[in-house]
Length: 431
Image (cartoon, rainbow, N blue to C red):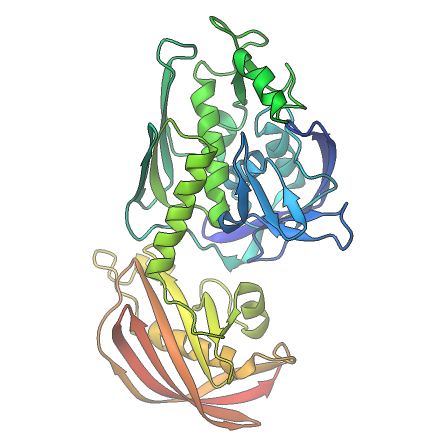
């Protein structure tokens, strides 16, 4: 499994079960999804089948689970499925559901993990975009302590504390890759205290909870089951945290440290991570149209590892565009291009500006029927180097347009520093 490529499932698969809070029986269909879509929920029981992406900006409730909502589409208790997608490396998936809450299965992620494994995994023709925070992000509120520190791999260290009350204190540190997730995290079940049950039901929660899908903790012992792991409780906290953080829309490359975490804190941490990332990226110009991966790969013939633009902001005039590319140390060319002091090859800076220009020239109703070849580079000048991690942006302006070609002026920036500029001549041909 190539960790630098996006993945979806190999075939559609159905499953059904009861929601732990609503008690409603839901029928699900998992379907393969195109590169760049992410995890998308579709409410087939609502006229028009509205959808809601799994996105941290769409979280509306964290009461004993995580709920996302977009217009009329609301989907509850999404964290176990998202944890399974995260652990198995599933980037793109369409989830059709005929109820507002996803099934709980046996209270772990295994219900979803087994189904996704059965459906198979397919590598897609698109580069995986990892979420690496530009800086350390912290949360310290009401006894909960969370930290996310930039790293070249994903790891979680988690602690729970219940004092003298069962289950006491537990700690685990793990790098949850696919194999480790299946073996050590997926089967860890949700739990509650016996003393909480009546209050939860008064709040309209736990209506589908049972001795088969929840570990029930009495005053001195587990009342209904044998633990799958001696530290199953803290492992389930990691499961929930993985699912909630996958709402960022990309797998993390960071070290996560969690002390007494829960859904409310997890979601707040993810929001802070999203804000930190947005601060480090160029903002779209006012009124600009955003062109992202599905449309980019329709316009451009390039594919991983030579698709060198992540998104393009098109100004209303159609004559100026801004490309964005996130540069991480995991780019394949850094293995050979100064590996001890990685520097973005300057020829790729030119290619980034050229691809941004091609998107500007071809974005339209027939953009999938033409190709833009750049045939001349004029006045190319470099002012500095780019070293990872970094976000570079281009500003390209159409200076002359003809039916069979065009002339474009381009500039490339890293932060506020201009690192290159050039003039490109393009020929436009039929595919």
